Amino acid sequence: MTDHLDSLETRDPQLREADLMMRLPQLVTRAQSAPGWARILAGVDPRAITSRAALAHLPVTRKSDLKELQQESMPFGGLNATPVGALRRLFMSPGPIFDPEGQGIDWWRFARPMAAVGLRAGNVVQNCFSYHFTPAAFMVEGGAARLGCAVIPAGIGQTEMQVQAMAALKPDAYIGTPSFLKIIIEKAREMHADISSVQRAVVGAEALPPSLRKWLQDHGVRHVLQMYGSADIGNIAYETQTGGEVNPGMVLDEDLILEIVRPGTGDPVAEGEVGEVVITSFNPDYPLLRFATGDLSAVLPGISPCGRTNMRIRGWMGRADQTTKVRAMFVHPSQVAEVAKRHPAILKARLVVSGEMANDIMTLHCEVASAAAVSAEAITDTIRDITKLRGDVKLVAPGSLPNDGKVIEDTRRYE
Image (cartoon, rainbow, N blue to C red):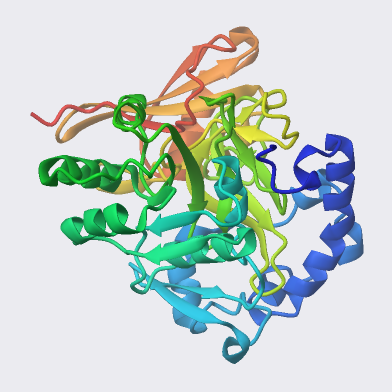
C-alpha cells in the first residue's frame, strides 16, 4: 500500500515545472482582480509571467507587511479574490492578522502530510490543534474529510480529558504540537491509561528536535512526521518516510512555487544556500504571489527516497528578519543587500555587529574573488551613505562566510 495521496506526487519534475509555469499567467490575472494585488502588481502583464525568471521580477510581499495592509483595507488587505461573504471562515491570529478560508475541499492542502504518515479512509484522528480563532484545527479537518478520516475535535488543553478520549475512542493518530503529545503520554502513564492505539502523529507549529521524536517513538508513537505551514498558506512542505524511517528534508506541496531568496531582498539564491522562504500559492480565493514567510530554509538537492519527485527543503531553519539596532538606529538586511548591489565585486555580504553595550562595532564581511580589485574604502563610504552609520570592511575569500542565511549577525556582549 502506497502512502502517496495521488499521482501528482510522483510525476516527472519537468512536467510539474511546465504545468506550474503554464498556470502562472492565470494566477496573476486572478490576483489582479483583487484591489490589493491590483495595486501591488500594477503594470504587470500576466501573459509575460511564464517562467521563474519572470516571476522573480515581481515584487515580494512580506508576511510582516500584512498588518499594515489589513489596517488600510479590512479584513485581508484587499488580497482576497473571493468576496468576504462568500468565504467559509474568517480567522484572527495574534497581531491581529486576519486569514480567510474558502469553500473548497481540503482548502489548506493538509491531506498530503496526513497521507504521508499512513492515514487512510476509516482511520480516526485526535485533532489537538486549537479551534479558537486560528486555522490550524480546520486545516486538519479539511485533510481528514478528503481522506475519509473521522476526527475527535479535542483542541488544546484539558490533558486528562485528552487521555480519556484516546483511551475510550482509540484514535489511530494524533495531530498537534509535539510537546503537547509528550504531555498527553506522560499524563496517560500517570493515569495508567492505555493509549497504545495512537501509532502515528503529524506534528507542527513548533520545532521537533531529534531527541523529542525519539522519545515519542520510544513511548509507542512509531511514526512521527512533521509538517511546515502557515496560517496564510496552509501546508507548505511535509516529512515523508520509507520503511518506517524518516526521509531527509521536507517535500513541497504540489500547488505551490517555492523560491529561496536572500533575506531583505527578492533575489533568488543558489540551490543549497540558506535564505528566506518565498511562496507563490495557486489559491483562487486568496492568491499569493511571492509571499515572503519570514522563515529561513534551503533547497535540498535530489529526489526523496519515498518516490515523491517534488522539490525538498531542509525544514524551518530560523527567522529571516534580522533587523538590528546599532547606536540607536535600526539596520535592516535590505540595507546590507543594497551595499552589495552597489559593488558588484561583492559575492556575498554579512554584517557583524560586535562590541559591548554602548560601544557597538559594525563590520561588513565581504566575499570577493580578488581583494586587489575591490576598494574597501569605497564600500565603507557606501555603508555610511545607506545606514548613516560608520562601519568597517573585511574582505574574505569566496566560501568563507557560513551558509546559515544570516545577513546580520549580532555578537555583542550585554553582561
